Picture 1 (spheres, rainbow, N blue to C red):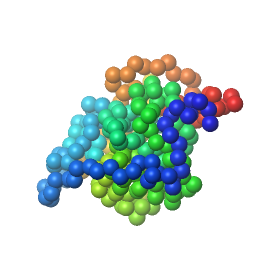
Picture 2 (cartoon, rainbow, N blue to C red):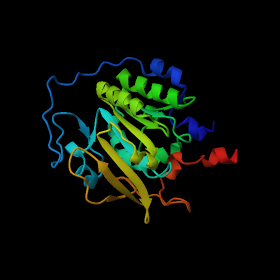
Picture 3 (cartoon, one colour):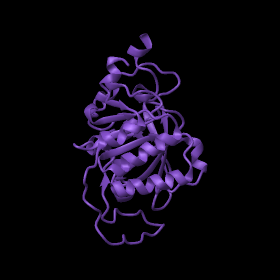
Picture 4 (tube, rainbow, N blue to C red):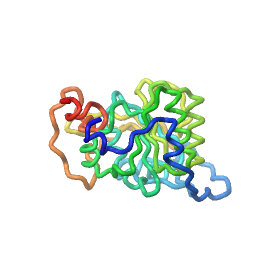
Length: 262
């Protein structure tokens, strides 16, 4: 492993996840049943926690005004490096409060430290889990969520089954941590227990098209267009990538230069 990758968090196997996170006590959710919401109205947070996305236009379209903290959120991608990490970066910075970890499970490539640092993500809070397969990845996600020591879980999956999604959604609710499931766009036609589903597509001029196609509220009339660089961060000079206009490809969509040259 190159020095660049070694500094991009800790890499462990799925079996070591419980020992690494350990039990962390967290406050319980307030007792009582949340009020009902009507399908023609955008749902409010109903007393449940949300985390601002960092993009005002997106927060205005998310129930409660941000990412729900405690539950399954699906991001559907044409390919890895479609803007997912840049979109999540502001929230991940807020969620990575000690002693909580950012757990990345089965990313398609090793996280690349310089790109993560450019997004101001805390590398010392990043835990990278390298499972043997889909079943181990789902198991690791469930253990991380139920541990209570996780700020957020990012789980890359190509073959998630509805039963697995339901189980992990419940684990995220019990663990008071968001589970961001990163899946291929083909999964859009499949049923899912996730109350919030978005499709991401990088477009020209380093922008990101975000389609919130499932939420607790009326359908979004048209996809949102967001800047690819989160607010408050300086723009970086992009390298030429003919297959994708998104600079997020630097984060997980390919080997780091140091490794490629080795």
